[in-house]
Image (tube, rainbow, N blue to C red; front, side, top):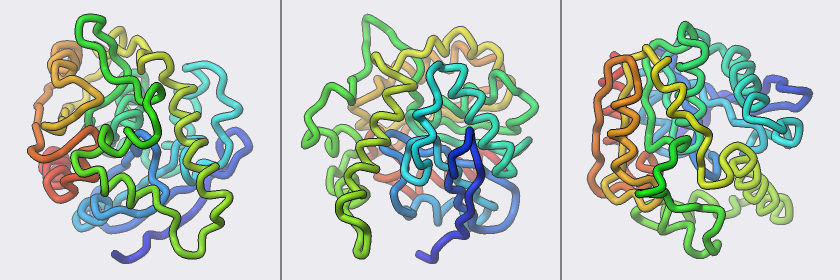
Length: 260
């Protein structure tokens, strides 16, 4: 894998990493639970036919300590809106996974002109008491790999300290990513997003890993029923919650097809 171009933008006084690679129509991607501490094969797949722009959410890997300035859900929405605008994603296609997918859905709901087409991989934001999601913040650290990916070794490799990295800072950054997600979604990942789904006009693709152990498949139907615009659902065999890590080529192909 070749390295992407890396730049930073300022969000609330904190530098935030933006990766960019490829050519073609612009496509933004907001990472899922745990963020992206390193470039992954899924991103290369998207960059084959798109100008892929990957801004880090505040507090996630590459997002410094920007989450510390965000106290309310509205703070988060405004920060992500600013991040996308500064990253050159105004009016582009937007994809996201897990916690990032929830933020992508919010952008399409509240600023409809800012998103052309939308692709959401097992988004957070809803809660059904009769079929609750698994709370990732309530799990032991050794249980997370099997909850995030169908193949736990993929998650372990993503989080492994790379050669040359500061071995003290690395685990702090990974813990900070979990803390940042908790500031948005705790408890139970419920942001009352269902109240805003009717505002989403962008054609929306919902992607679910067949082996998702975090977000019940029934939530795909809830999103489909709530979103005003056209929707389609793709179920990815052999994939867990972060389907893009388990099956990078299949998930990327579904997103590229949807945004053609």
